[in-house]
Length: 317
Image 1 (cartoon, rainbow, N blue to C red):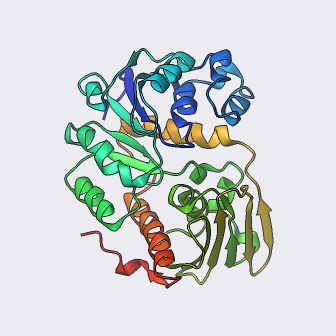
Image 2 (cartoon, rainbow, N blue to C red):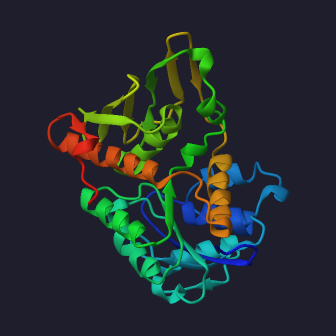
């Protein structure tokens, strides 16, 4: 618990197609509008520039260190630092240890997260880990083991905080018993499938039973069952655009769109800082485990020709 300490936070990146080191650092530190135009992700300055300046920043917390390894290297880190006023660019992630209070792993390749996060978790540095936490059963076992050992980390999709859906998470009585949810999603399942899964998860809560993926690597098509009897379908593909959420119940239905990416990301980061200060998690780790089982099941089902994969058969021990 870091209470009211002025927080120094390190950020790790880069992975292909993911500009979170730019956008998330800007939400902590502010940004140079001219430099941000050259970030390579036009949508980022577009939604940042819509925000009043007084809404940018998180009180008592700054991104002070950055390291980019993998898809991009130190030159990209210097570009992010210049655009978002980060004081120190380091060549190796481990160079942050001893200098920061927490670390954000801003990469969305789940297969890399055990290796990327281990040095910091071994050093007892709390982490926020971008979605998805993992893509494999073995890596899920590793993170569950680390959690049992007392290592501190949280991970989630920003679409858990969809401003348009949030009011319905606790109160959707006007639709009766939920029977069907349709959630299309852009990009590939390995990186963006968790956006679709976690965006609808709070509508139903824990109790997902199975996943069947009859699609391909390029274009996923998932049928997800919940113990309540509600069925969820996710159509997703490389080159597809995203879409809103269709919710159908016994007494009514609605279609909800998300118009505010900034809100989703900013709330995610605000809650990370609140967790660092209070040690109160924004959601139970059991939910993260269930969501990661669905990610694993979606990949496994596709690889096994569309077989229905039951979450109870995915081991975490």
